[in-house]
Image (tube, rainbow, N blue to C red; front, side, top):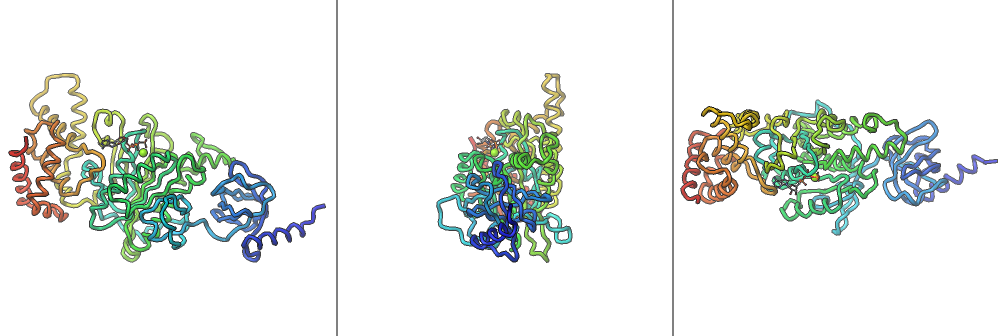
Length: 502
Ligand SMILES: Nc1ncnc2c1ncn2[C@@H]1O[C@H](COP(=O)(O)OP(=O)(O)OP(=O)(O)O)[C@@H](O)[C@H]1O
Ligand SMILES: [Mg+2]
């Protein structure tokens, strides 16, 4: 016969021996270990998301509460845990230690350092799961978050506190956009803490991103959280929440934070994997039914707080990878409906040399224009419409019909606009230079420059302006609508430069 009292007594002894307190905490035994998902009984007081400690020192978190057992996902190596092992609750929700020391570091989702740098100083415990700020604590988006990418800043402006989705097939430049945005924060007068969360990517790809951030001087204000394809699904699942917890630490201090999730498709895969092991019923495309909730509770945590709450913000740039441009697949539609707009990248544009490969018609930013400065608004007002018209005309003109002069002119202008919006990687522009470029084309000043010389023309024009037109650049940095005088000066700049350009 089994003596229950005896079992409890030995368990309590075990609990004490690995640092527990039998008055406030629970102790139980492992009944099953299936691929890192532990089923245990005896944990009558456990709650969802609670941190659990095993006899051998491993940690886990509660993922399922059933009538007579709980399921726990392991945060580290599963092989050491077997049936009959003791485990205890901690009374704490899973959290990550955050301090300013994290800036410039690469960590895993539990806060362990992955670079060979000195030990990270212990900081404040921030819970991985937290209820997002309510409407009363928020205020509308009003400050721009400049990406330094002409096409985005002009047509799909992003504000601090906004959630803008970057969506597209493989190899369409999704990561490039978020990396350029992080690099561009270097030049902003109001500094932004940048967090790059890598989920389910190859380690070599993550290493390249880290290298690039450092070589472009963005390392000092960035934090990289890495859960690569070779890490357990549980870590990949936790990574974006860790990122959010870190972002909230800086938010509490009134700082502006940019967080990028690269990418949430792989996050949904990790969650699906865990859920299938937990035997949760599969729904559409085999994702568990609450996969929408998974992403919405994550993205709701981006916020623009009001003055009473120190006025900080979290801007989120989630990435979603599509298959064969299918933005109506399950996960893409979910995330599109959660975010405040999307930037849709397309393979055929990319292959046609239009980089960034943004599909103008299907991209949108629903709140960012409120945050756009009057300076950039003044030159980009009609841009989107003109380009959309150009694209439909261009499709028509392919048939080789005779075109009237007006249509020809529109086509020509559209072609030039498309050309000026191309931008190489790792060269984000300040707002004043963006304005000069766009104005030079929309006002017709560059009509006599062949489009294939545009990249060189633009680059040298910017150099020239920086050397000889400092006043103009300053006037264009004020955020105000450019005066007649300023516009005249841009005209002069371009005309003078054109004479030197060979
Ligand atoms: N604006 C650009 N100009 C020139 N090359 C670019 C530009 N943007 C991206 N690229 C190049 O295109 C390739 C794909 O870019 P990137 O890795 O950002 O795409 P991705 O969509 O994130 O790909 P994946 O699906 O593999 O994550 C890279 O080699 C990158 O250097
Ligand atoms: Mg990528």
